[in-house]
Amino acid sequence: MVVWAQINWRKLERAVYKLQQRIYQASSRGDVKVVRKLQKTLLNSWSAKMLAIRQVRTEYQAQQLLIKLALEPEWEAKFESHSYGFRPGKTYMDPIMAIKEAMRYGSKYVISVNLAQHFEQIDYEKLLSKINTFPKLRRQIRVGMKSGIYNLNSWLLNQEIIHPGSLLSPLLVNIALHGMEKIVREYGKTIPGKKEEITLIRHGSEFALLDSEFDVIIKAKILIEKFLSDLGIQINLEQTLKGTKSPGFNFLDFNIRQYEIKTHSQPQRYQTFIQPSQEAIKTHYGELAQEIDKFKSCQSQLDLIKRLNPIITRWSNYYFPVNSAKTFQKLDHLMTLKLIAWVKARHNHKSTKQWVEKYFGSKDQANWVFRAFEESQPVYLTYHHGFLNAVKQCDTYIKTSTPNWYS
Image (cartoon, rainbow, N blue to C red; front, side, top):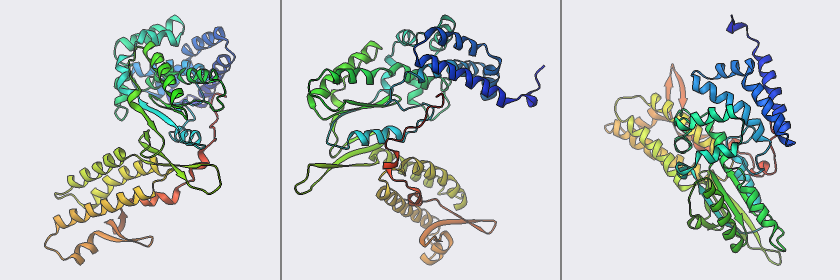
């Protein structure tokens, strides 16, 4: 009988990690036989099963985690350098800064697209063939696909809610789209006199293809369409072709555009400007306004502050590393106007001085800070511009490779 409280979890984690590390190393040197042997060992490992049970609550989730523990180190050894989404040691800022680096020396043509809605077309048998694993693991994955647990289209379009396939689906998406970068790079090598590489940067189902030559980007587009067609995904990328100059293009809810810097007697130079996309700003303010409107009745300002703060914090944390100062200031201005309207609607019989003193105060040399009191202590609304103090220069992200945790 196993006593849960007496299990040495650190020991189990070390045992599983060592197996994963050996799988990664074998995959790196192309030793498929050893990879398969170690994956079978991991799937049957008591340590791996106990870790899976600890992390999840249902049988199908535990099975997903076991499959992921076995497959992930094999594919981490194979994944391309500009594949960033849903991978250990990678962040959402990595692809953004990789795009900035690619645009550093001149304007580009760009094809930027999110394939999420097109994954309903994917041929799961072809994906299984691409995974190319041993029969037992193949059968387990096929069962999940046929039952709809690994519905990649559904997961990609609903990542903010709990999805039954959310443990393994991210890895399956990366496996499905693995190889796109290699195809365009191999094509680039065949072009006489071409010095710069064709750049393809991917985060999950969203990717950006960049090159300075129109003919090159068109031919690379055709290669990608053929690659996707082989997976069962039919798409015409022509309509997504844009330039990096104003108005730029959107990627991961950022707007990325390029400005020419005019200099005398010097080579043409460009500056890349990255900020929240207009769609993201509109959606975020809409969410804030909706929450404020919900509290028009008798709820207290303290409840409203506690409701708004997590929303503002989450959004600001995502966008603060880029050129967000003007966006943050604009959002704070609009939010303050909305809150003033909310206060006036509640106290239209009071003078301005009365409701200002009741609902607004000063903090850190800033006035008109929305606040309430809880047990005689002030509770302040979080403002977007407060995150600008934590801003790090975007350039610090460039060329900073996060070590792979299997290495």
